[in-house]
Image (cartoon, rainbow, N blue to C red; front, side, top):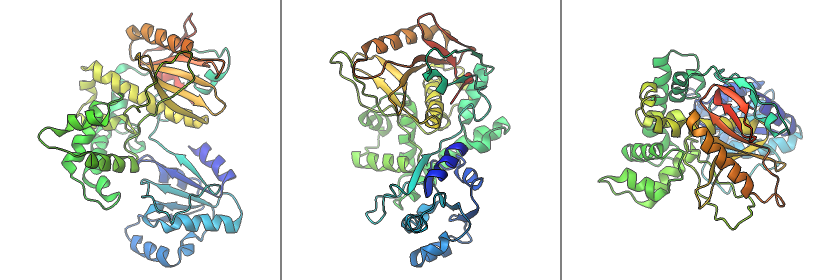
Length: 411
């Protein structure tokens, strides 16, 4: 994220870092800022809001880059930043951070051409030093790239990393403290964050039930009707209520669904466009399901779904770092790829996330089937086909499919 932020400050007047609370936005931004305005400072919040209402430019004065942390507390600051960027005519003036997407407001300028947006997620396994990074995702887009490596991440370590999550404050903490933080995060979302996002009071029990249903359906394309039926029980919940709760969870960056990829294919195969259900960090699902590393090791079906979600989190971080995007593929014949890494120049690679050795063969065959379906007269052939695993060794199979442990991957 440091590299992305430096590059964005060189090319834009202001940079917005958006993402969930506790993912390290403020701490990262402070490393690059020459002055800081903390809008959440309880000793000054009301005073800052009052100044913003009458003379927002006063809050923007200071050495640059100036960090405005949690700017959405006083939304008028957005237009103030845009105006100051235009007036000064220089790059690298402001860094904005936000854990909430404000409600649509016609008075807020889009910021296009002035404010670059960066998404920040929780830490990947490479960032937490649990992946040794011997296999670079970017290198896989080079023809004939060599793939080799050996992961030291054991299945027990992986279960712990999944339950702990990529929350920066939890990295390096003793197990009891680290695992408790994911539970605390869920409790904060349920009891406080979902209602404070827009001042609309919401039923905490229903929020928790909705999030538990999403956790039970993680890494699937479960429709909202399925989610609603799963969470209802004796409590009838309207579509409007579900929609309101889901929008609130998206606005605080808790829900992070994976969109579908619609490539050019040779046949008239119907491609499903539903997103796959994911949280911004798989530890949220673990906490909602009241699981522990020990219980994950006894339930490999659930472990497998959560492992896929962990792989999606890391691939999103790595794809963003190399200027790419992450999607998923699924057609009417149930041929799928858990993740598609697509670069801006059209190059792409397909990934299946499978924990064990027994699943690799079928995953490799499915990836080759997908490769053969693509109309290469209309788009690029895949740069790579990869099975991302919880195993030990990285290597290239005779059929060209790459086997890469999650404990070896980096951007």
